[in-house]
Image (cartoon, rainbow, N blue to C red):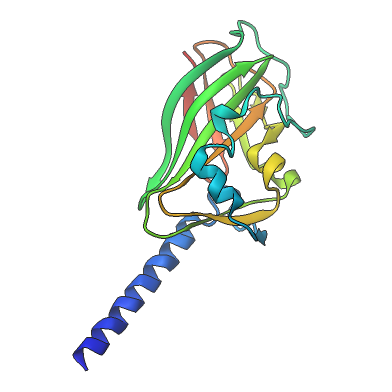
Length: 205
């Protein structure tokens, strides 16, 4: 009888853990409350393991770019460095083994590409989602030092999995990115708002 109750308590504890992690992680890749279709295949998970989903290894910022609403201040600023990568490694989020890191920034052709990595270090899958392409392009932004707000013209979600939900398996990662049609001046700082995460102050140097 005692063993049966102990087993029941363990099952309840595991279920509660799964519920908490799902609540924490389900909306972090996209906007809170966004919903989408369940992923019918493990292709994204397998690609994430090899780093082929997105991020620094996917090529130039123009690759896969689509039209959108870049927002105010879409023209490049002065003193732009040409074709440069900045290694940032800034923590955007870290809780219960779930982490999001701003890995690097790439400057090419008057555009700024920000590369982020989602890692699941927890023992359970991390449910995430992408909104529709239209909603996605208004879910993140950068604010330049002169006050201009610029939204991305393309993102990993808009070009890869718009309006989809899926999970990042335990021990695996997804590399995400966004391309902004502007480049901050060298040495100046800008604020990054990435979906529902707290605003992050970033400086290219």
